[in-house]
Length: 312
Image (tube, rainbow, N blue to C red):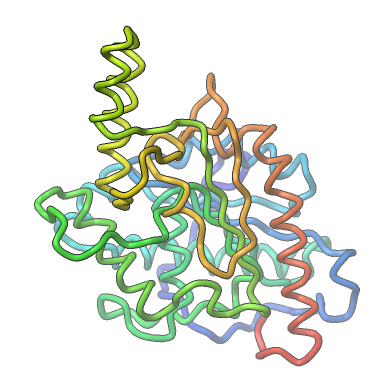
C-alpha cells in the first residue's frame, strides 16, 4: 500500500522497479517552470508512514502536484538487521513506480520524473534506488525516474572500517552507505538528477574532556548532554580531532551533507519527525529547503531537455 497525502492507502502493483516506463511524458512539451512535481517521501529509520502526514500536507500547500509516502514501517527496519536493506529498497521502488504513475495522470506534473524526499535512512534508500549495479541481488537503476533526490538528516557518509559492527542499527545503515559510496558516490547523476542534502546544526556535542571542564564550572547538566550527544555523533561519523561537532541530535552535519549536492544547513531542526519541536519537515524548515529542491528538480528537467539521458 502507498499512503497519499490524504492518509488513505492506494494499492500498488507487486512488481520490482525497472528503468523503462510507458507513462506519458508530455512534460517535455512545456517549460519546467510551469510544472509541479509529484513527491515521494521515504520514511526514516524506525518511523511510521503516518508520522509524515503533516509534511505531506505542507508540501502540497507549497505547490507539490501530489505527495505519496512509501509504506515502510518500524518492523521493516527491525527485520532489516537480519534481511538487509534489500526488501525495504524494493518496497520503496514500488512506491516510486506508483508515484510515476501519479505523475503521468497529473495535469500539473505531466509525467515528469518524481521529486524524491528521503528522511534519515530513507534518503539512503533513495540513493540505492539510483544504482545501475545490483544491490543485494536487486538491479534498480532508477535515476531516470527521479528528477531530484532530497536527503533530510541522512547519514550519507559511511563510518570508517573497524567501528563496532555489533550494534544492529549500525549493521542496517553501514552496508547501504558503503554500497552508495562505491557505486553511486556524491551527485553521480547530476545534472539530469538534482541533489539536495539538508543538515542541521541545532545540537552541539563536545568531547568528555571539554564536558568535564564545564562540569567543574558548574554546568553539569549541559556538559553531560554535550558529552552524550558527542558520543552519538562519533558512532555515526567520527571526527575525533574536532573539539565540538554540530548536528541534529543524531546525525552530525558533516555526515549529512552529500558531496556535489546543493546543501542546506538549518540552525534549529531536530532529527524528528516531531510535532512539538522544529524538525526537517516543519514549516520553517520547509521554507528553507523546498525552494532549493524545486529549483534542483526543474534544473534537472532542463538538463534532460538539453540532451541528457532519456528518462520518463
